[in-house]
Each structure stands twice: as C-alpha cells, then as structure tokens.
Image 1 (cartoon, rainbow, N blue to C red):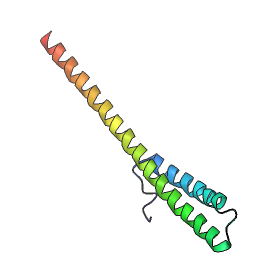
Image 2 (cartoon, rainbow, N blue to C red; image 1 turned 120 degrees about the vertical axis):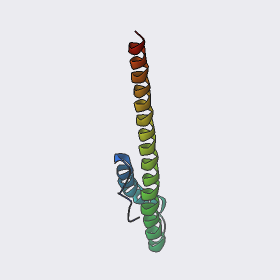
Image 3 (cartoon, helix red, strand yellow; image 1 turned 135 degrees about the vertical axis):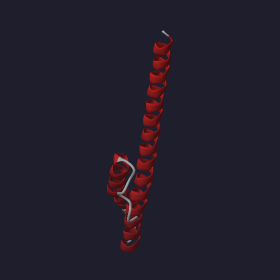
Image 4 (tube, helix red, strand yellow; image 1 turned 30 degrees about the vertical axis):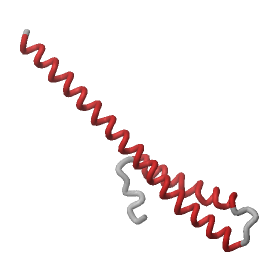
Length: 90
C-alpha cells in the first residue's frame, strides 16, 4: 500500500480516499453490537478493504479513460490521413 496514491490518473487516488472513509464507517455499522476487539478488527478491515477496492476501481476507470482517449486519437489520425489522401488525389 506504499504506492497507493501513485496512481495512473486522478480517479485512482480519489476512489482510494473515498474507500478509506467509507470502509471504516461500514465496519462500524456492521459491528454496532459487537465487543471492542471485534469492532476494532471490522473497522480496521473496512479501512484496508475500502482503500484497496477504491484503488482497484479508480485504476480501472483510469485505464478505461486512457483507452478511450487513445481510440479517439487514433480515429482522428485516421481521419486526417484519409483527408490528406483525398487532397492529394484532387
């Protein structure tokens, strides 16, 4: 988790932070009628699990965005090449 915030894009760090905030909250809600140690374990586990799941979700979104951007660039390049061929034939 040392490189948790060294993401590929902006969504990875954001979702990791959201997971770090919501994970312990969910752990506290689940453990509302548990004893102290069980509550501590569930809250800590929620923190780690939420951060990791947020990290994975953000990474997936960042990769998806990068893929879509690359497709857009390739399409624009293809259109440009097609236009240059058309102008060369005229």
